[in-house]
Length: 128
Image (cartoon, rainbow, N blue to C red; front, top):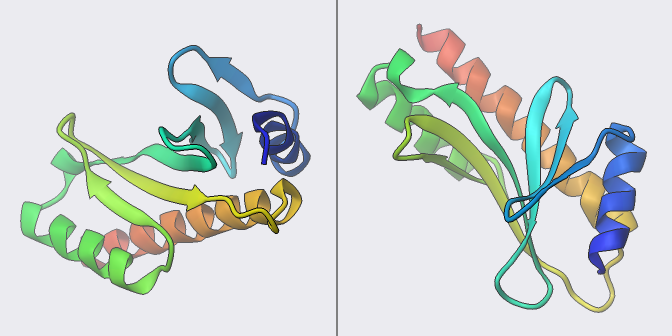
């Protein structure tokens, strides 16, 4: 998958407002959430993330850790993490294979991250 193909698929799913942020990747919005798409360090690797889902300081440390761990166990392919800056981020790293196309994998990644965002936020709401 070439970067151009990935960006075209993001535009198809999320609209034309896809912006290249130098040294960071491509920024776009889906369902009112900010996303980044970055090329991985390895050939064929790509990372999509929701870089700031919630502010960790707004939640009890134990509760937040429990919800992050539950999200990681329950939602395949994603990794929820608490960043040093206090944000909770969701990441999806993908190693493209020769038989995959951007047309099939990009919408899948965005849908999984969207689902994981809703899942984590819902768990936090129920425990507040």
